[in-house]
Image (cartoon, rainbow, N blue to C red; front, side, top):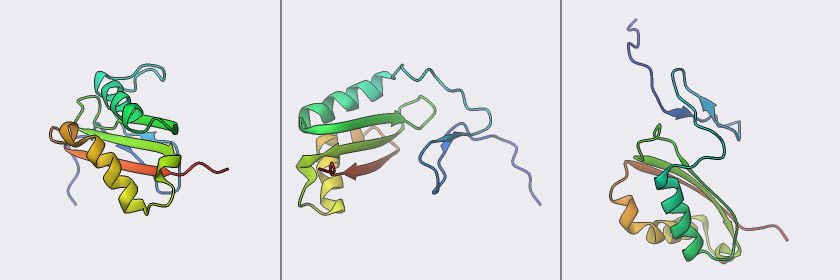
Length: 112
């Protein structure tokens, strides 16, 4: 059996949990601080989706800005299938996506 000689410095997400579990060796930053990339992406999404009731952008690449996870809840998604909601987010971030390794998108419609 081969042993892993290098620890991953990303965040591991369990399918049964809503909160991230940090991988061994992962440095966590303060909960209130955001990276420049997180702030930039959040600003773009706030402009594109002004009716968003919830928005969370998280750099899940360990801080280098190569991969992000986005949770956005907006009434602007009402009547659209999930794939269409994700296409809207992708379109809003078209320029930024070019420099990314990956993007996780989670969209919701507010419950009324």
